[in-house]
Length: 140
Ligand code: ATP
Ligand code: MG
Image (cartoon, rainbow, N blue to C red; front, side, top):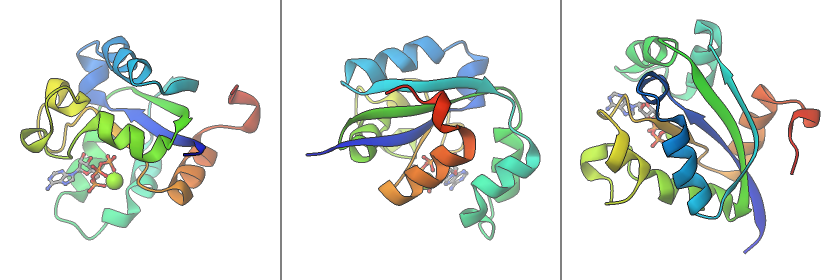
């Protein structure tokens, strides 16, 4: 196992319900370290670009509206196999299918408002981190 970084977003459904700390506790309890974090309002253009891979999917416009519907908390997480480790802490995309104890099982409202994002590969993690953080903002 190698130490890696991944990119996380605490989504608007979670910030709206004051769950930032509860989600961060799950992240830290898992052994991942939060090495950068800031609360932002995503612009429509940022959300469209972030989810461009889903541009042809029927839920794309709703997803962009949702991600810009309130503040989000963007984060860089570091730890052993961080990309895979965080996806297992998050649980399945659809909370109905997520394992007990995962963030999405405990907190997600539905398949869209599912409380968190986590990168799906090392390559995408690096791209996503660079999109939201400068090197000086990441203190490992
Ligand atoms: P994320 O990329 O947010 O970490 P993921 O990798 O588990 O989640 P993706 O398939 O990449 O899931 O979908 C990106 C996001 O789009 C999901 O997290 C969810 O918010 C939304 N989404 C995915 N599938 C659907 C769907 N069928 N209906 C509505 N929204 C969806
Ligand atoms: Mg994804």
